[in-house]
Amino acid sequence: MAEHARDPRPGQRAASPTAAESFAGELRTLRLDAGQPSFRTMARTAGSISHTTLYEAACGSRLPSWATTRAFVQACGGNEEEWHRRWSAAVNGEPPAVPAVPAPAVTSDPEPRPSRPPAAPPVPSVPSAPSLPSAVPHPHRRRIWTHALSLLVGLLLGVFGTLGLLAIRAPAAQPDARTCPSAEPDTPDPQPTPAPDGATPSTEARSWIARTAYDQQAASSTRLAIPVRVAVTPGDTLVVAMMLTSTCPGPVKVTDSHGDRFQVLGDVTDSLRHRVLVLAAFDATALTTTDSIRADYPRAGEYHMTVDEFRGVTTVRAVTRASGDAGGTDFTTAATATTCDPGDLLVSAVGSNTGTAPEFGTGWTTLPALQLSSYRLTTAHRIATGAEHCVAAGRTTSQWGAVLAVLR
Image (cartoon, rainbow, N blue to C red; front, side, top):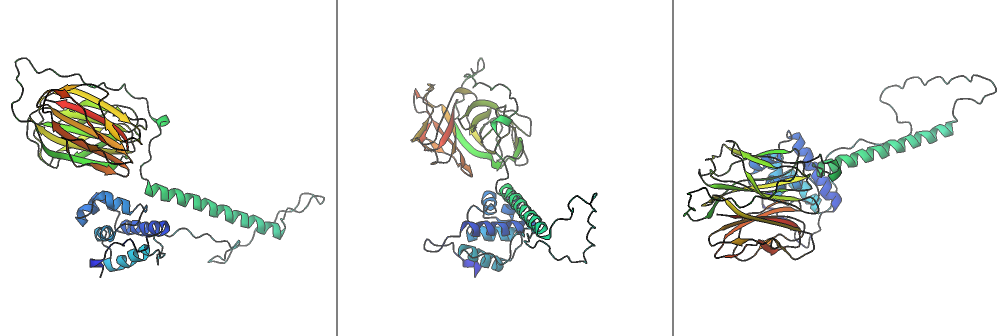
């Protein structure tokens, strides 16, 4: 029965691109019949599959697993047995029994029979002078024009159908640099912030507490609000890492639902206009799971955003940043020299595209990465053990941009 179905083994035939796309079309039709719930709502209903995986299942780039298909069907109220048969047919490369999204029929019959009696044909016009040839076209020539018109209509339907499929599979277009609006000047990285007069450094151990919030989406606007998932202790520091893909230049502003603003610590854009930022709010206000983190940002293809809570830091000491093209073997911020003291907290964010996922070097604690399509946002932290040259470095073959912030 479908409950114990397994994904296809290496020996089985993989679904052809046509079968995968047809099956995705059937899933989209099921979702449409269910009232087109959001993928986040579907993920909550299914309970075991992420909204990103459900979104990719409806794209048709490859055949989803049965576990993903079953979660999709359950979230839309479909019949599991029927959909397991459809999924098995797609795995074996069989065409669907019923087309998922019926396309408009195109007929090659130049004169299709109407459902009602046809209207009387128009009376041909009478030549204005006997010496001129008749205005009534020859029957053979009229059939040629009818065939040509049918071919043109079919071509137009094919073009518009293809554009509609592309719109479904790629919901967010990457903004072209030529269409970017004029931007405000980039904000330079902050200089080390001295402690207030009479203040003494915190004696509390500097440490990571929790991932407060996170989200990743194809960007349909230039504003977002993500819910706080873990309550924040007042006085702690919130560090935001953000990646904007194929973005336009312009300011990025982050705040929370209490109005606290986040300071931009580091900002780097690579040669393909993928941008990585690190921001922080020191001495944060207490937040609960009813609050949210909000951001305004320039036009972009996708956004990835994480918010992490740290304890025992009150200021930024130094910031470095760097970027590199795909095809290398590593990433590093060593081009900009900065020195750490024992106990300093180093926080780094690396945005990457294609290639291998960034892997930080020894001593770093890597936090859960965010990935959407080929783009990743990876964050990590560590405590300096002595006076040293501060660097965020590791291995990757991806196009990358990295920011390192030294906090104390």
